[in-house]
Image (tube, rainbow, N blue to C red; front, side, top):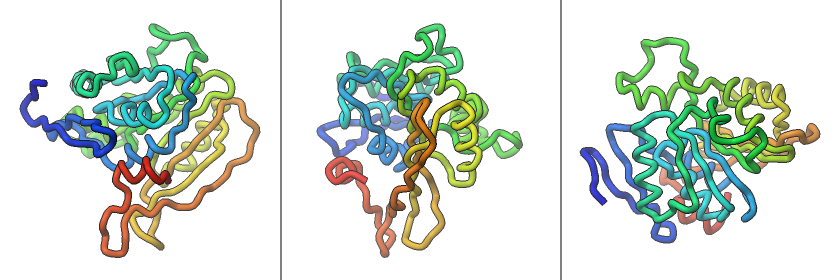
Amino acid sequence: MKLEKDERIEDLQLNNLKIIQNKSLYCFTSDSAILANFVSAKKTDTCLEIGAGSGVISILVNEKNCPKKIYAFEAQKEMFNLAEKNIKLNKLEEKIEIINEKVQNFEKYFKSGFFDVVFTNPPYLKTTNKQLLNENCVIANCRHDTLLPLDELARTSAKLLKFGGKFFIVYRPDRLSECLCELSKNKLEPKKLFFVSSKENSSPILFLLEAIKGAKPGMKVLPTLITNDKEGNYIYTIQKLYREGL
């Protein structure tokens, strides 16, 4: 496969899966691997990823769960092209389909209530100060919710899911209250929550949440995931996550 400028192929160290990263675009981090491991789907499920990026989360979710089909929306053409290359690189064209479109326009492709599972690693930062945006437009849109504010994400996800469908998200702790509020407002009831910290006794850097459309209230808080040992070495490789779980 022909690589463009700034592209490199990396080994995901899981069942011969590979990923093309582009250093001039947005590269995935550990939160993608943790989310992919957290997502659960049955073999009969039709799944959707919102914001495919490089496609790495859909690739890993497919490897772990082997659902019937995964669709993924990616609004940015540059990231869409990269995701498509990664799907082809791993010969997953029949399992994963990437759509170059804002997810808010999903009704051009799917009926409401079409999906069993929706998962997303959305931009974490509010777009409140244009001066904070990265000069690289692609990176800026991966970091800031310019294209998909949280309220639109919750509302659209609720429309996409069938009753009883599952929603998975990784997000920043400082936006937890806002996230819970928006999900509940759209009848996506939070059911499982856990935090991620870089070391013991430190403040969380991420949270992961599972919500179910139309479920009764009642949320279980799982133990915090510590990602680094006392020496600062990263504990969870993708391979270890998938062998041992969270």
